[in-house]
Image (tube, rainbow, N blue to C red; front, side, top):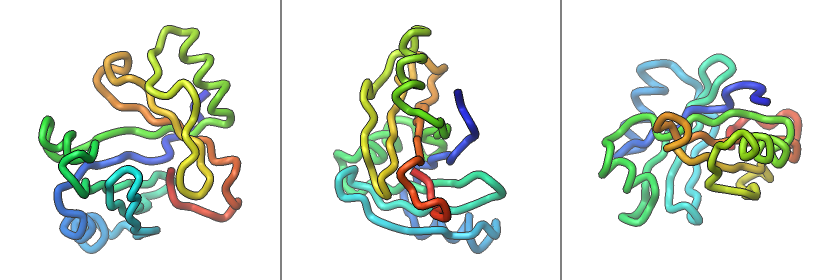
Length: 143
């Protein structure tokens, strides 16, 4: 069902400071930096090998990222797995007893389809699924 880890999302208080560490100190390539108003977040996508790191900074007190940091501190916020068919994957997971946050995928930036699983069913880890079929083949930033 899962093809690969698409990215690991890391919640940070200061995106610029985190980008300095991951890019300048660790040497990861910055693929993209953007603001996603719908989710009240600034993010930067970086690549390490075949996996991407998504640094996430909340832009308001109501942002899910800000709330995550208030509750748990900075750190890994989610792991994203790429799937071939997100609707099929969601059906299969639900049939196996996994509770879904999203019963239907959301369409987000660059036409990606994403969905999240409830962390209480995945040992406390927020799992994101992404289907990239709508992307241009040479686009390389994560969902």
